Amino acid sequence: MLKKRKTFWKAGVAEKNRILPLFIVTCMVTLVMAGCNSELSELSENRETVVDYEVYPSSEDGFDNAENIAAVYRDIYDEAVETNTLGSLETLQRIVARLGENGYVAVDSENQVDMAGAEQVIEFCKAVDEMKRATLTIIVIKEFGFRKFDLETESGNVMIVRGYYQYDKNGCPQNRNTVSYPADIWQYTEEGYLLFEGSYFSNENYVLTLSAAPEHTALRVLPLDEKCRELNRKYVLPVGYGQNNIFLTDWHEEEVGELDFYDIFDNFYPILYGQSIPYVADENLAAGAVYQIPEEIFENVIMTYFNVNKEALRRETTYIPEKAAYEYRPRGFYEVEYSDIPYPEVVDYTENQDGTITLIVNAVYSNGNTSVAYSHRTVIRPLDGDCFQYVSNQMTFLEDEHDIWWHSDRLTKEEWLEIYGGIE
Image 1 (cartoon, rainbow, N blue to C red):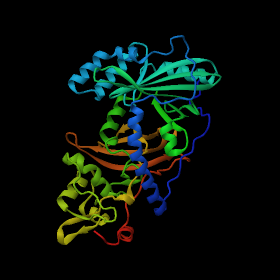
Image 2 (cartoon, rainbow, N blue to C red):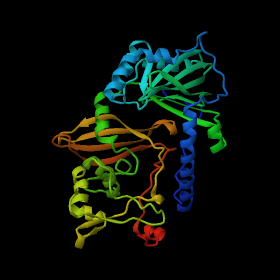
Image 3 (cartoon, rainbow, N blue to C red):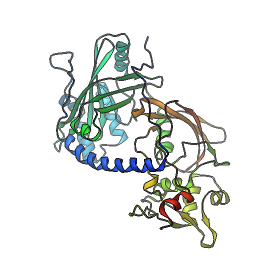
Image 4 (cartoon, rainbow, N blue to C red):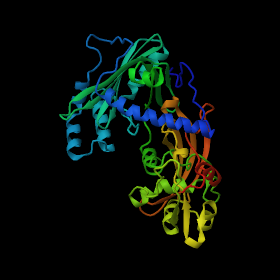
């Protein structure tokens, strides 16, 4: 019988350090590494990474090669390039379905399409549990190429060869990167995810971290109700978990709790007005930018998506009556968040009698090797057309080893003055 959750060792997640000086140092190191990474990633995209593990394929010819895989859906690819729809959901669905019809295991890189050939993955997981020998190839479709995972198990151990193939201008797949490693973590979760992690030697990564390069993979194996996917794409994914706490804290439209309306403004201004927010941080990191946003603009953004009255909104923010404006300080260098965060997945929903919809959402975090870092119950109110409002959010589950460590609250007025010294 397949064990739905099998872990070779238990991964921990670093806790967020809330001490400001150390956070500043971390941010500076991150920025430096990001600059190096942009150069190094360009190098790695154009040459094959040296691997230090050997893989033994199941036949003389090895696993299916990339050219054969690409040929299966070449007509779909060519049509998508011509119509500029290569990254569309419909194109991904067609490609995954075509590969499945030809016997392949395939899924998209964002886990937004049901996996084709999922039964093969389940059988492979059984072989791992039963310590039998087995092989499996999984194709993960990306907009401009695909990843190919060649897996082999024997005696309960799993060896992985991962190749990244990118299309050239002629539409032919080119191997940009290949690595090989044993799975240090391998688990099939109750939520229907296959999670695995391993490390390989990379000259570029060793220069930066003096260690092997870790690779985390999370692939949804079991299908998900398409309605759940639609609700997620409309109400949760566009906002996500970055630079806002809408889905990270308990609140209700009648009791907003710690809801940050400035972060809400940042997230929904581009959605509502179709353009980037013009109220940006100062280029001088030593200066703090301060704006006075006319009340009609600020309130329109907030009250379009939240049923909050003006009095409550002004009470929770800094409102300047004599100027009919809201004081606004954009997030600066000292309030940046980590980019390594989970993504939301609606796994269930209830249509309530009052017209609202309750969403049950899991936070999937591949780098934390979990398909449920935490869960929350979010209620939304559909309105006429495509309009809607958020009604409430309730945190329902948080793994012991995970917290919301990547999130940074905005500076209070006192903290802001202490850091910037009143320089505006």
